[in-house]
Image 1 (cartoon, one colour):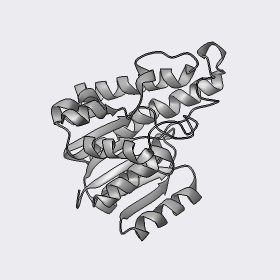
Image 2 (cartoon, helix red, strand yellow):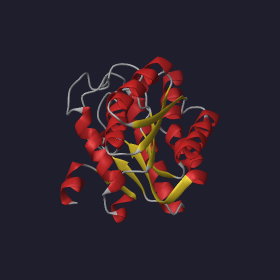
Image 3 (cartoon, helix red, strand yellow):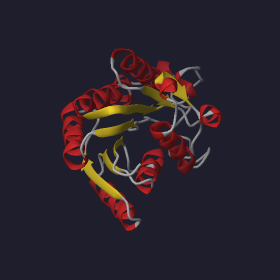
Image 4 (cartoon, helix red, strand yellow):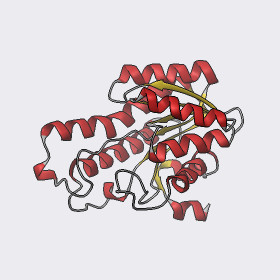
Length: 228
């Protein structure tokens, strides 16, 4: 991905950090954000020590003006944006221990604002800066499509995020898809699941090698990757 510009939200932990490093290793200029400035500085140091190109900016995807500035920075530093990975997300409480009928209104609203509206803001603010053939990707999981006990607002927010992706695929000229890496060993899963680096490989494939027809609002998982 030499000379490509890629934007990744929520790039300092788990899948996000692994994705930033994977794109940088592949030659892309990665522009990423998070709310923790110290974590962003640590990430930038790691990427640059490995020879990668990265620009970091503190931003909160709940704030569309932060997202607007992030995409403006990406376009200014790297030119037209070739791929956008909406990865930033939150989970309030212990995974699997937040039944929807006991969610607080505050937790529900913040989860929706971050995980669903954040995808909308990221894709929407990217539009003026996208290259022809740019790809819009959002991270999600099976809980968005098949309810599991105890996942409450998080499951609802991911279902809404997937609907946002489908609508962008229907309403715009850019390919858009959900990337579902399955269970990944992050804070959300209590360290259970596949390595974040393996999930990042799936994101990288979706951004540069997947058939564009598969990105027409679809879900890209490891099976899709094996099938090419």
